[in-house]
Length: 398
Image (cartoon, rainbow, N blue to C red):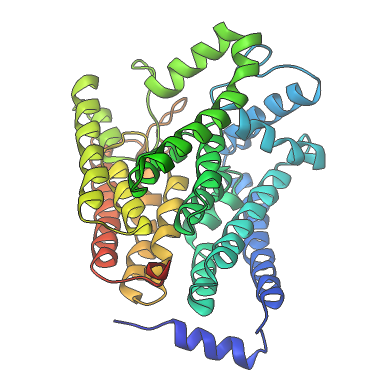
């Protein structure tokens, strides 16, 4: 066992950073320095080395959808939309702050959510262990996944923020609020819906379970209702595409399944769906029967999902890094595995075919190199989860 908490506690003491306000200011200073540097490097150097039209393909999409909202238009009906509605409304402030003209505004906005994610982890868990909660937030803030994704204009820090917020609410037994957060999160990106079976099973009485279902239903229903009423045809097309996918279109990402597909090796969609469903059933029921705490249950569930889900992008790992951070503060091996897994995973993306583009690096058999790099990164994360679930965490006090 390697201890990082004691050393960090001494450093904070010497710097007289001993109040929540000062600690949040340190988060802000670190974010400004690290993420600001990443944004400068991305815009000043990387964009000159890469075709600007290809480097940030999502930003024109952000602009089109947010401007449609600002002009009084309706998503799905008035602009092509392949994502849930809430994430698009959350992007509106960036458009208003200059995102219509400058790419760096989007990166700065997403970096703000990386800061908010760390702050929320600290503030939500500090009553369990002040120093470990703060160090866990710092680990998230300095994670290469968070820095690379937010600093280059990807919105996954928003998704991670809402996902982890729901987990924290589950942990501290704010059950109705957790259900509402999951319901709102579903219409941000799909990942929070994965939390609901854990949330449902963690409640040992049926009254609590039924209440959770009602709060989830109200949150999802209220958000979806305007689109169901005003543009059902376009909205239903989105639902079909988003949850069932398009077999004729590459999934993108850098999962091992995606690289096998690139090499002409793929399972029938129904077989892969059954495999994913069976694995997820185990990931929900095993922790339930073993009476595992909330945080451990969610960690096992998300790792299982990432193993079998064919469309895994780099930013998705931010959620798992955040979950593992509570163990990384007390076991350096977990930090090492999650940190160094970034290298093979980022290299794997160089050989991955995107949804609308060819792989950046392509030669005969390059998909196989991408497969092995993705597999190495995946195994490192699996081992980190294995180490984590073998030991207690400070969140167990909840």
